Image (cartoon, rainbow, N blue to C red; front, top):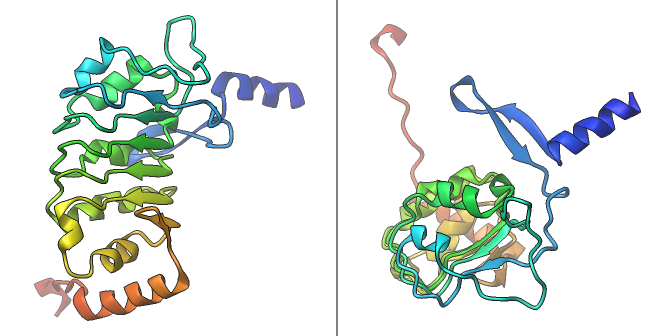
Length: 217
């Protein structure tokens, strides 16, 4: 029995299959098993305009080298793409699969100081995402934040420096939509923040009305 369990761990490398949409099984990586101590793959300040350029651009060297597989894929679950000129994340998933050994386990993505006008839905497919930096972009609609509500492990988010920061109730809105956050815009979320967000939500967000069918009468 013990031998079988050890064999499973070697094969799965900390992964488990769980039900996903459309009856399919999705592989979700255990964050405790992922190489979270590895330095991030750093493409910051590279003048990158298209995600595809990551395949030909050389990442910035760090103090500690990132280990690679025999195929050349990096063993890290963190990536820095900040201070570039990205306006969309087309082919992001495919590029990550080519660069990283276990892209499903990504826990930190830094996309700050780019030209992103929206929060791309591709970011919501990274189940283990813990830290997401989006400050200094061009996000105009506060409702874009709603997309991130599907990420159960998201604990740190930055959005300051986007046009949405000027929206009334900006901080309260984000905290009410993402109640699991521990830090927002590099500021810890306090009990007062949460109570303020709860009051703001009751006063400003009306619950959706459920339409009754004729057969219900």
